Figure: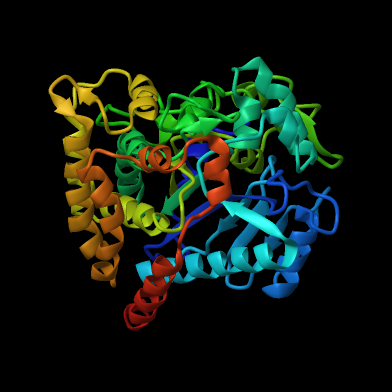
Length: 456
C-alpha cells in the first residue's frame, strides 16, 4: 500500500537531475477533408493513421506501437499524437527560451501545411468542432483506454463524449525548482486559469449552431466529470499544497488499471480504494498512481510540472500570445506572487461558477460587482508584459506577441467575438480554418532567429 508521503513525493524535483527552468506546450488542431469538410477517420489513404506514418517518415520520428498506433515520437523530444476524436496534437519538447517555443510552433505549423497539401486536408484551429455532432465524429482512435473512458463518461455528466470528440485545447507546462515554489505556482495557475480561458475564449459554435457561450468548450468541460475536472477544492487556502492535491485526486474514480493483458476497466473504484484493497490480487504502485493522475483533467494539473489546461484551441496568430501571457504571470518569480496576491483578494466563493460565467460572457460582464472582467483582464495583461520581459533570457522578444490579444482586450472582445463578427454561421467559420497566418509566421521566424543567441 502506498503512503500519502510516497504519492506526494512523486511530484518533487528529482535531486539527481540538474534543474533547468523549462516551458512546454501542447497544441491541438482539427483536420477535415478539404473537399467535404467532414472529419477525418483513422483508416484509408487520406486517414489519420496514414498521416501519422507520413509524419514519422517526414520528420524522422518513430511510430509508437499501439492498437491502433496514435503517437509519433519526434527527434529532440517533441511528440505528435491523435486524441480520441481525431484531434491532431503537438506536444513540444520543454525548452528554456521563448524563441525555442516559437521555433517548435513554427515547425508544427509547417507540418500541418505539408499535411494539408499532400492529403487534401483542411486544418481548423478553434476550441471546438463547430459543425459536426458527436455521432458524426465517432471514436476515431478506438484504443482500449478511450473505449473505457467513452463508456464511463455517461455515468458522470452530460458532456464527456463531447469533450472526447469535439473539443481542442492548448496546455502550457511549467517547471519548478522546489515543492514550495511548485505549490505557489500551482495555486497561481488555478487562480489564473478561468481568466486565461475567458481572454482566449474561442468556441462560440457547436452542433452547427451558435451556442450562446464564448467558449462552448469551457461549458462542455464543466459538465464532464466534477470529480476530475474544473477547479480544485481548497486551493484558495494559503497553505494548500501537494498533499491536498493528492488527497483530492485519489478520491476520484479510476478509468482503468494496467495489467499484463492491457488496461482493464476499474468499474468506478477510486484510487484510494485500489490502494487499500488492491485490484485482482495486486497492490497499487507508483506507476498506477501516475497513470491515474494522467486522467485528472482539472483546469491546472500537478505532475513534476504544473500544467495549465483551461485555454481553448487558438488560431496560429494567437498561439504565441497564450505562451507569453501565461509565462509572464506564472514563470516569473517576481510576478507570480504578485498575481497570486491580486487574484487571491477577489471575493469569489465558487471558482467553478466563475468559470461557467466567464465561458458564457467572455470579457463582457463583471468578475464581481463593480469589477468589469475587461478591467481585470487589462491588469493581468500588464502583469504578463512585466513578467514575460524578465522570465525568459529572451523575454523582450516575446512582448510583441501580446499585442494581438491586447487589442482585443482593449475592445472588450475575445477571439469568439471576432468569429461571430466575421462569420454568419458555424460552417463559414469551419471553412475559414486558420485565416491568414503569413504575417505571424514571418515574425515567428525573425524572433526565433534573434533568440538563438540568448539560449541557455
